[in-house]
Image 1 (tube, rainbow, N blue to C red):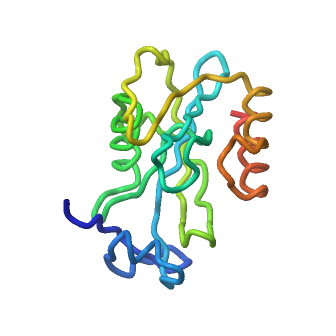
Image 2 (image 1 turned 180 degrees about the horizontal axis):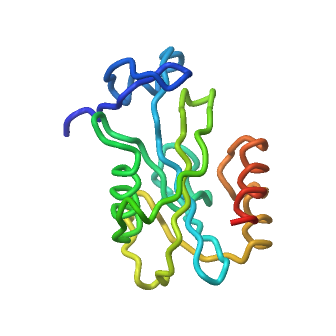
Length: 172
């Protein structure tokens, strides 16, 4: 398997070049990469969450946003959204299905995360989960979602980010 390559950027989002994922995840790479973080909402106003596979290096067995991943070198963020949603959840989408919400600076991971909303009404039983990434998924009403997001069962995202997610998603 070849090394995953990522586009890198300065803090203002200016392209710097291509580096390996390993380099980008080193302790102090001095450049940022752009993962996509995708939140999914259905017509009933519920939000989808995924439980990360127990084999994951970071936050195994924790609940998290339903789809996320690295944007590969030369790939647009929307292309990464489509690919990650298909790989992890088995959901077919197109670029116009995603709404860009915000670019989020994650200093801990040297990331300029690109956050999107996907409106989707697929049932849990209709999804094909990537078992190496996702143990299971579930739809939650907003209050259940908020409670889980702030619990120790959810991935350890910064409180400032969780607060932004709650404020943003409740109004969508």
